[in-house]
Image (cartoon, rainbow, N blue to C red; front, side, top):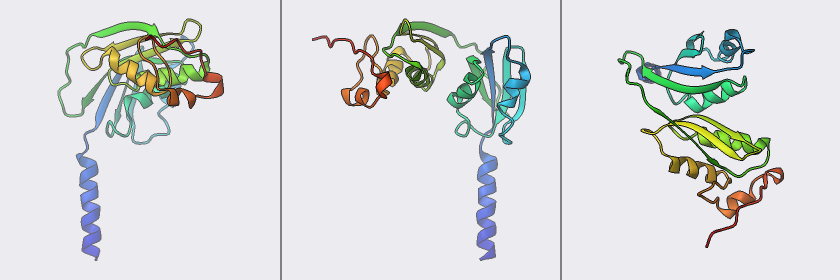
Length: 195
């Protein structure tokens, strides 16, 4: 029995050490009042995040794997301080980094919504699409402004993510049952259906 326990423990240890550690490098934009120490403090409660460094508008750190700390989670932490990640690169430790610069595209389009809850839902849905590096929605104009990597995603995927959470866009309509599940304060006036 002891041999089985030792074997299971050894297999678990090997599987954990076999996971590739990831180094993230984020380009960030932040208000002038946000200090390096405030940004670093976002990572203090996570003992498996190592080598956190902030230098000007660059944030770097090492995580055990992509699944434990996906980019969308890091962006949400930064958003608490009104810091946006405008671009990022990830490299497996031991792997040679890809030094090619990936071109960012910018676009904007109308996304229907009415309140701060809508803004949070819309921006989170847009950022959840792999390749989107920045998303800002203005509740007055109802315009979503995006930066994304065109080689990784396209506008169609972003529209689909938005309608999936109940928000009509200028070119797509959310399913009625999804729209009906929105909170009462989030019920926006839906555009007429084109026939």
